[in-house]
Image 1 (cartoon, each protein chain N blue to C red):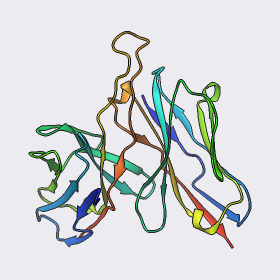
Image 2 (image 1 turned 135 degrees about the vertical axis):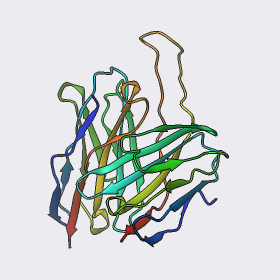
Image 3 (image 1 turned 90 degrees about the horizontal axis):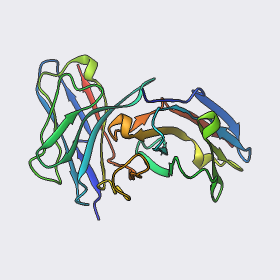
Image 4 (image 1 turned 45 degrees about the vertical axis):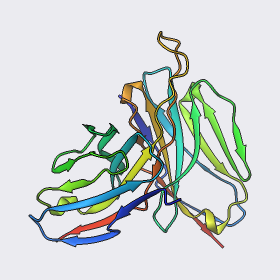
Length: 115
Length: 125
């Protein structure tokens, strides 16, 4: 069975702090894709990153970075020097052949960045 | 470039009524999806469609009907709305899968990200 767990329901930080959002996934497939989406207070879902299971290189995009570790089935997301505009709900998601290419979402982590 | 749009954005209806939520995309994406978002559940897939006239059930299809007569439209109908269907509904689309190398256990498959509409907030009284 495919499953994504985001154990942190809510995180609150002060602006400029670094914050890491955890994502743990389960799949029996060897080929799979992982995603992060952001849902700001306005409600839309914004795609952030896609990572396939064969690429374990960590990725950095500005203040965002992602740490993919197959050994621990984790795909964690770090925001460096957080800003108020980072306040949102962040979803991790998984797809693979085992899920018939459907996206399986975690329950989300609400991040509040206080000024 | 309109992308993916949903209408209405807000809807209040009564138990037992039929409601149709519209989804339209201008990208000619083959795949389209309907999700519902409820507190504590994240996003759950209701139905999806791989192409026009091809639809399949997701995780929570009961009480919903979909159709896909045209690639760009994917309406979701609640045939007899219930209070438990009060939710925020998101439509999404994605480009076709690129299988890369074909066949065999080592073959790659590629799955492109889904792009989401702005959502419809539905309240069933």
